[in-house]
Image 1 (cartoon, rainbow, N blue to C red):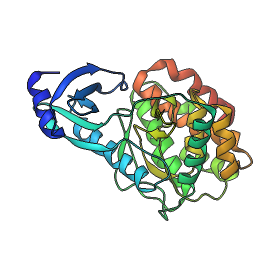
Image 2 (cartoon, rainbow, N blue to C red):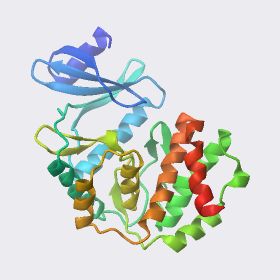
Image 3 (cartoon, rainbow, N blue to C red):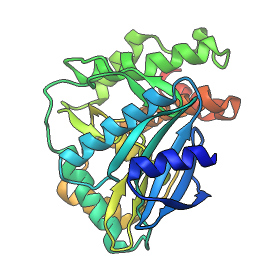
Image 4 (spheres, helix red, strand yellow):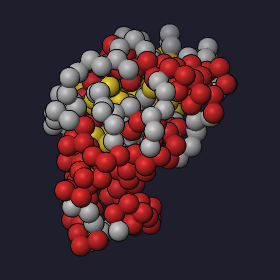
Length: 288
C-alpha cells in the first residue's frame, strides 16, 4: 500500500495509521490490517472496474443484515476511490475460538434472521455480486420463478457462453420449473446471506458470530443452509441450534442439491472446468 494511500486512509479514520500488513480477504480484492494510534481496521482494495460497485453492494448487504439485529456485521467506516482503486474500510474484528456455544449461537441467530419476512417478494433492490459475477435480483412474486430465472438459468447461459457446457445436455426452463414445482414447498422470503461458506463468517474473541462478504437477497432460507454444507466449516451444534428454531422441511436433500447446483455453476464460471463434474453429476441425477 502506497504511503500516500495510507495518509489518505488516516484522514478517513481520523487517526494516524502506524502499521499496515496484508491479510487474507478472499480471491477478488487485496486485504489489509491497519493499526493506528488508537485501534485496528480492516481495509479491502480493488483496482478492477467493478471494484467500487462491488464494495457498495457489500456495504448494502452488511447494513441489511445488521438492521435486522439478529447477527452482527463489521461496521463500515468509509468506502470510495483513491486514484484508480476502490476501497472499503471497516472495523477490525479480532477472531476467537469457534466453540460449540458460539456455533450454536450462529445457528440460532441465522434462523432468526431467515424467519424475519421483511419483504413480500423474492429478490433485492438491485443486482449485486456473487464472487466476481453479477448476481441478478429482479423482484419475483414466487420463489420458483426467481430461483430458476434469476439463479440457475443465468449461470447456465453463462456456462454455455464460456463453452463449459452444451445446451443440448441441459434442462430447459420449463423442465427446471416443473421439477421445482414437484419438490419445493410454499416459501416465504427471508433475508439470505447469499454466500454462506466457512470463510464468510467469523467468531469474535468474546464468542459473538459475525457475517462478512454477503451477497444478500430475499429468498428461501434453505439456500444458505445448502451453501454451509458445500465446503464444510459448520459443526453439528450449528445445525441443531438452527433447526430447533426453524425446523427442517421434508425433501430438503433434493432442494439442497439444486441450491448447491447454483453455487457449483458460479464456481464453474469463475474458476473453470474443475467444477464441471459436480455440475453434471447433479444435472444427470435429476434431469437425465
